[in-house]
Length: 196
Image (cartoon, rainbow, N blue to C red; front, side, top):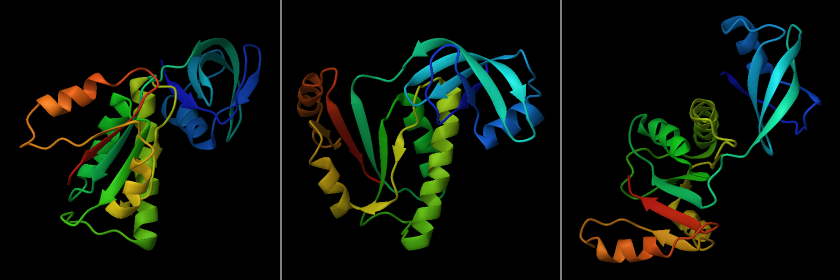
């Protein structure tokens, strides 16, 4: 079943409109029409709906059944050291599919790519778009927050808010890491820092 985003919340019986980009994709690429069933990703969960109207730039959907949320109870933030080339795009895609709630690209001393200013903003927009598309593929209820690339010093201020902070290190062994993992419970905010 095809999934689309809507900024609007709703309940069964409500009519909502797909985003302009999703409307164009539904009509021109997928060739959906009135009467077709779709899944809508709403701010408060997913819902089944039926297309009831098509315009040149908007598809109207009537919600039929709420499906609830498919988000994990444990909130995982991935602090990812910025890798070279386009590997960050793959990391954002897979991190989204695995359930990360937030992805923070971190420019570290050993990061090859150095982003700043306008470049950082453009890259963050591209990564957000990749995360949004990954949400459609994996059936999640929400797109993760993808932040603009930041320095390690800036990221540390966000890490202070995590309940559990995991930093894998090859010489640590598994005992300390596994003990930290055992403390994670539903509702826990977990940070995971990975180098470039």
